[in-house]
Image (cartoon, rainbow over all chains, first blue to last red; front, top):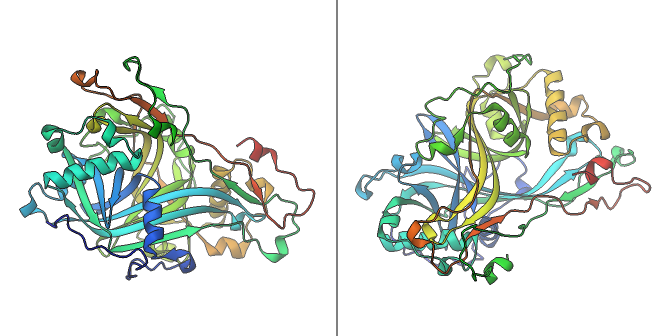
Length: 231
Length: 231
């Protein structure tokens, strides 16, 4: 197992491209910029984790959080990827995974059906996921999950006790083989289509939250905390 | 290659569970209900497509659309999963894939960090993806992509010509081995935590679109179409 110690990599050092992080198409949309990758990863909290089981692919949506150059991925001790990663650290061969995070930012409506597109930002991480067994690192990861979703929330909730920590499985995945891909801007219509009588442009997705719904059994006098009104 | 003809399966016939569509945990959150699966698939347009390359998993975000009991997945002829699926129908062994669609509906804030959760709806489809080579089926798929994102749009744009059809690769994936999973409702705190002084409840995600951004070179007099104001 690796330790929690990580080298501090400057944000201006890009990730090194590899055979599998150089796309076969739309290379101009790919970037290895560390700060851009971090920003995409930090702007949401649900990833799609791919792994191979019995020779076939499986893609699971799950919670993740970034701490420096390491991602933590949430599971339960009964979940398939974690059981596959091995129960004990000394038995842990690691699980080859591909973790992908995608933001859909807008719909791109061109005059031609062919040039319709989606504005998006995505990050793909290839690597070996390993179980986190160190209790301190696990505790760090659980705080990160909660604060990644709602910044400031972990300090305003009851922290996990030893039993809960044991019941939560966490995988770690280091950010080494990483790429981002994105599309921005309006449609790229063919010159001969510019005078067609079809509306063209971008429909941006609205991001945000609706008003909170307090638990029916919430004790009286507990106000909506500032970190929620700031969301 | 399979044909475009599909048996009409009644919406009230659930998908048959298989070893890999029965979850190892939270089985009460799984469903095989055909109408629920269709509703989850029809409510968005970006999926995460998992496949195996050189023994390792790859998860790609891409566009999809449902037509009856078949999904179409968008690619380009240069993209990796499509090249792997074979260039010609007679050479096409099919590509084992796992296609996952996830909606994040809300953040579930419990009094305890451990019981924090996400309300979500997801569908996972296992199967063999095949290249669509029939021009009529490909044309149907392209219309479906556009109308799946913006209902009514394919009739209000220039349809793909033969060259564009040839440049667009489409995979088909039949809905046979399918499951849905979802979480709804508020937090499930431990009884002994109910009096803790922490706010608890649900923060629903806001879904929708911001005002459209017309192309800078949009011809004068083209109004925003009704199907966009209805979005």
